[in-house]
Length: 261
Image (cartoon, rainbow, N blue to C red):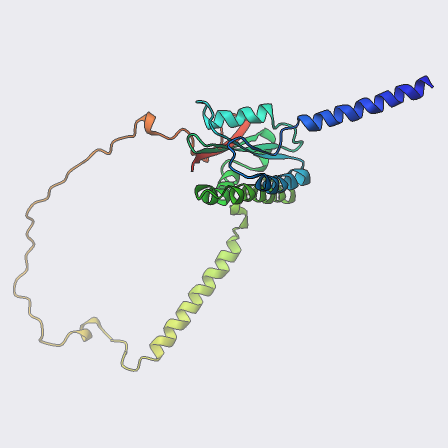
């Protein structure tokens, strides 16, 4: 009896703790800036959660009215540390700060290996930024989720982060070049063969009528030359953008890229 009671208490405790953990998990979509309707939130959440469950990751979207003076990059990294770290195979968050119209995609170390700064983040940016600039937030967030899923699928299949250079084939380029040159030469020969009034000349003077040109004087006169050297001003350090680079982050624990919209 006592053994059965202990087993029952243990099972109940496990269920309660599991439900508490699920309830405490941050949502895949946190629309603090109120950009979406409830129906739109459900639609976007479904896209994000589909990728998260398939690859056991977190690819959250968080919108805020303001970061309260914190750089978007630092704010996004804080979100990863605090709310989005339960993805077994990596965590990523797209942050939108509406006070400065900044966006930033932050990745943790595990996700950085799958979606790299140099190729992966620009791929995501090209997918969602046009819609984001037009104010089509649902379309932008869904493009972010779907593109993330494609990059994760690539990593799962190839065992490395997405790189468009992998699709380049030197052999295919060589074959295409040979075919292009061959077609060009054949077409040129065909056109020349159709021109009945064109014939090759034996020598260059055949193109000049005899006695039609007489050179009586020849000279070169150099008048003057003015050269001006204008130094190109260097931009001040304050004029440089805070973040809009595809270079790898110097911090090994984070990756990401951002900009304005």
